[in-house]
Amino acid sequence: MIIHHKDTSLNFNGTDFFIEGLSDAPELQYPGFFIFLLIYLAIIFGNASIFSVICLNSNLHTPMYIFLMNLSLVDIFYTSTILPKLLNMLLTKTNTISFWGCVYQMYLFLAMACAEVLLLSAMAYDRYVAICHPLHYISLMSLRQSAGMAVTSWSIGFLDPSGHAVLISRLSFCASRLIDHFFCDVIPLLKISCSDTSEVELITYLEGSFILSSAFLLTLVSYIFIISTIVKIKSAEGRLKAFSTCSSHLTCVVIFYGTIICLYMRPTTSYTPKQDKFVALLYAILVPVLNPFIYSLKNQEIKNAFMKFKVKLSY
Image (tube, rainbow, N blue to C red; front, side):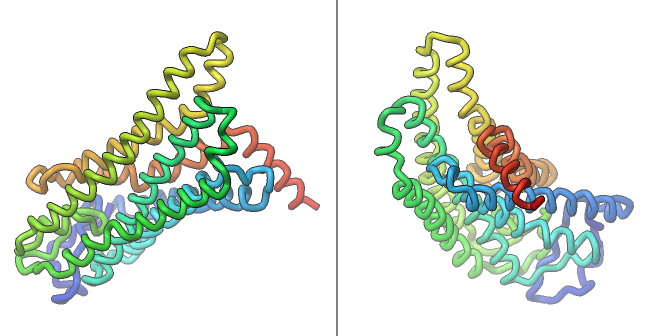
């Protein structure tokens, strides 16, 4: 939804990149701006509301809601690395970004993606303990332990993409500076580099494989035990109630992991811009929009907390 300028010399110098955007149709530019503005406001409002309600309600200071609070914060930062710049490009029709601005955007986006993956796996483990070992839940998932898991997720998230940022900052981009994407991402940057990118690709596969595989295996094993425990519950009502506590999380895990794996766990030669833009749009925008609804707004405790908060505001 961003105009494709054939003349990239406009507001462009040797230290800038030119971002292709989502579309080269001028008539979609302003409608696109209002659509993405509404989406961004919905993400900020929805996730900020969840974060605030959990913070202000002491009854929700439990491991599960601590993870939800951190997930909401990650989603706010996650989309804020992309959408403000995208909105600016749609409004001003200026599709340039500085070299270091591009590296910084890529780093923050990867950091938040990594933190979200780890938080999702921590939430899967939390659901495993709650369903499979309910009597030991307090000892296995204390507030201190859950806070430690959340801090670890953030820490690894910020550390993991630092290698990518350093290596990419050393690459040469002498052939083209046109990024065929709607933000600065690893693969589109590697595609336009005239340097040897094998080192960056190697660290992407190694770190990506280790973190994604570890988080995915923890999530998978957790759900294997969860499902086997649910199946053993005699009453249909009990099975439904147990499954309802993790079905929403499972849905987002499938969407998030599926899109991440499709985009990053493959060689750059298989990169297809149009298809990958659509997939990137799903995990960059759709998941943060849905998270407040699928994780929290369907939760009765969150609903009650919202009602109490609304009553307080009315006085």
